[in-house]
Image 1 (cartoon, rainbow, N blue to C red):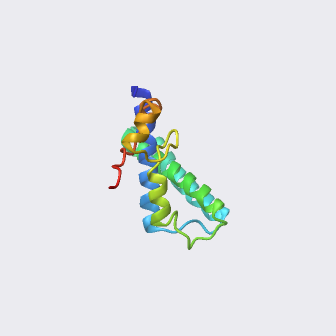
Image 2: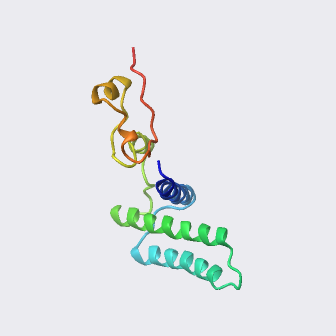
Image 3: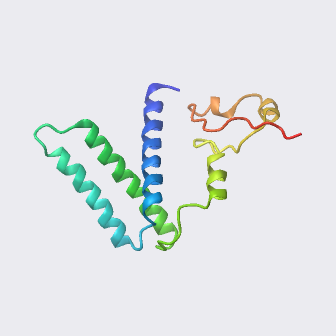
Length: 138
């Protein structure tokens, strides 16, 4: 994976981790207004850091990650019909999503599947593999 793609991937992971942390503490947004208010609050915190005489790059990065996470949470909330009592995904659905490559969406593959395909698909999709070939159950 080239350095630029690694950097993009790390930012995405950081935003996803921040979103997951937020979802552990707080439900989805009840309305577009609530979501906007939370995003604006996070954006204001980023702006406060930017305006400092000597802004801290790590603090700016952390605030920008929070803005990204809240933007994602806004989308999830909207797609869930603004029902705050629903968490992102139940464990079964979460495992289904995590078992797919984040770039190409291949599902988890056995070693035999990879051999039949002739290559590991994640070797061709900028290296964003978050799964391992599963062992065939005997």
